[in-house]
Length: 179
Image (cartoon, rainbow, N blue to C red; front, side, top):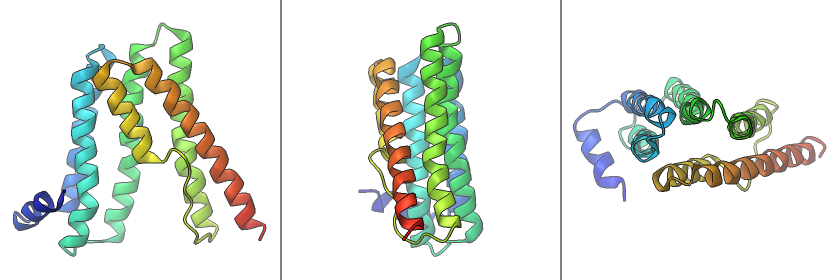
């Protein structure tokens, strides 16, 4: 599905790293929209930034521009891209303690899901570490909830999914490290 677009970007000699940075800039532009309750427009920008993120790796592989720095940049900016829309929601819910707390716990568990995987890899675990709610699922639910205006429901789903995935990865890590 993305192959023609990736092929076009390759022909235009677009750098995968530029696409990564463009994605984060677009996602950052969603923050004031989300913070002011313009969820649909904010959701469109998060979706567009996510599209850049989905294409950068394909572009790097097909254009033979894969690099260790590109991988580092992509992983690092993925964490920033995870944070930005949630930051916008934290600003939106700043005076609603319950929902602000839900947003903040989302931030915590979104980051812990990624951290546990990275830490296990750093400890030499070679097996794939999955889970119920990996990044694509979290972002998809967030975008759908923004586009539909069902933000609170989306936040509860992503929080539950992230918490379960964190526990799954921790448990799997315990199993793999004790074997």
